[in-house]
Image 1 (tube, one colour):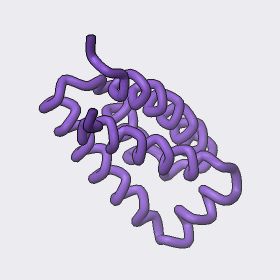
Image 2 (cartoon, rainbow, N blue to C red):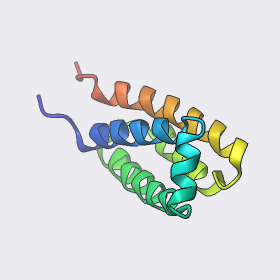
Image 3 (cartoon, rainbow, N blue to C red):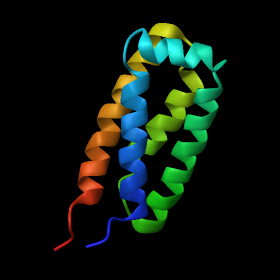
Image 4 (spheres, rainbow, N blue to C red):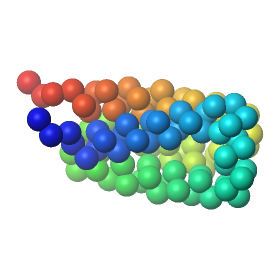
Length: 101
């Protein structure tokens, strides 16, 4: 069975958010890119949300990811939001990857 595009994008988004949630490493990466990675993540979450609507997959992860991308400029808040987004995205990806009965 072929994986849905939305499920694949949810897995990619979850892994990227989990990386950004690693203390010091994620923050250093964000700062070293001049915060451009937050713009990239915003676009990734927007594309993921589009495919989630199109394929009837869970949407809470990409929506939370969009909010995270907008508010992650603040150090401690950004870390907490990246961690929360990663958890929700992993759950959404697991649900979206389940075969339908």
